[in-house]
Amino acid sequence: MRQIFLDTETTGLEHKLGHRIIEIAGVEMCNRRLTKRHFHRYINPQREIDSGAQAVHGISEEFLADKPLFAEIVAEFLDFIRGAELVIHNAPFDIGFLNTELARLDLPPVHSVCQGVCDTLRLAKETHPGKKNNLNALCERYGIDNSQRTLHGALLDAELLAEVYLAMTRGQESLIIDLPDDNHSLGTSLQATGDGAANQPLRVIVATEEEIGAHLAILAGIQEASKGHCLWLNVEK
Image 1: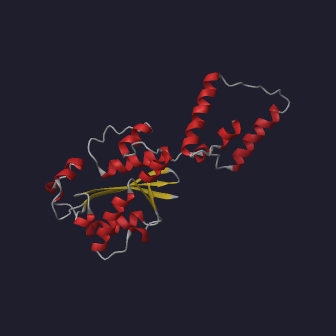
Image 2: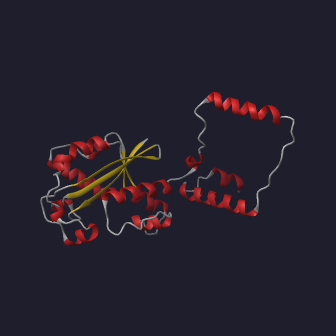
Image 3: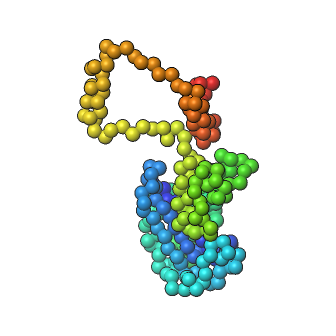
């Protein structure tokens, strides 16, 4: 499964009032592994930036003066996200801005290019109801280092979001064991351990109290991440 973790910075909060995208970034993940491929561009919005927005992201009009227009980077951007699921924190905000920019160029909306959108803010609210679920709060909750995030930045925020998503959605699929790709090697290994051990008495190793506690803590984490569907914990109960 191919996913793009996406974030934007803008001149203000309302695309309906004419505010524009000034920074866009995405990082690629395939089958829950980051590929190190990313897309990152600053964009000249051809308008002023609200002081409140600039206080959040620190991007000035002077800095953007020589940057390309959205029309100049849109083809590359659409190629990067094509066929992927977009994962966005507070997706309606970013999708609203993206679709407005695309409409200005008479291009179809984002959903016509990607394979759906996952809103991690909505997911976080379902997983942690009644708690703060902004990106900083989630980083702190899952022990993710966000010390470099003194200001909002699209690329850094997309990278942090990918880490948060992996932590927030870890479940029983995270316990899948990677088997050797070489079936011959696997068979040889099984044969080698089977021949000499067949007549040996089995050695029983009992878990210590510390190991049992660590085991239960892992199961509790899986129980929370899977919303009460941890099979191992239910069997033990």
